[in-house]
Image (tube, rainbow, N blue to C red; front, side):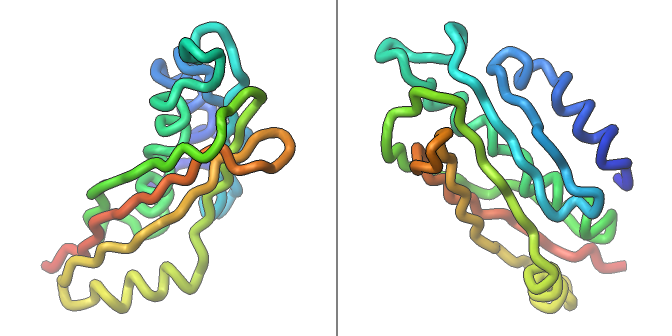
Length: 150
């Protein structure tokens, strides 16, 4: 993929599902190892209880770990979402945010576990917090990663 971080941010912020839900990419670090997303509570992304719609909460974090790993690992690897769960902790009534990180240790672990073409299913835990840093939801994602063998 190899795209510049600011073009990636710009493209995601113009992506129709994110425009429709009010999701905003706050920043993407230049090395693609951290992303921050946020979403303000608006009339078009709230539920009948006047809190953040659960689907919008999940969508704000859905693609990022996979996209970050695709960029960091390169075309030598297959990276797919395998599964995800979301645990709603508290109603989101203000702007919410999430920060997702990929560490150097994790990249080393992925490369080690997949070096002979084995699949690897790492788990990622993402907290979605409100403006007061209270956890609104916890997302657990499992990815499928495999090195392409020549």
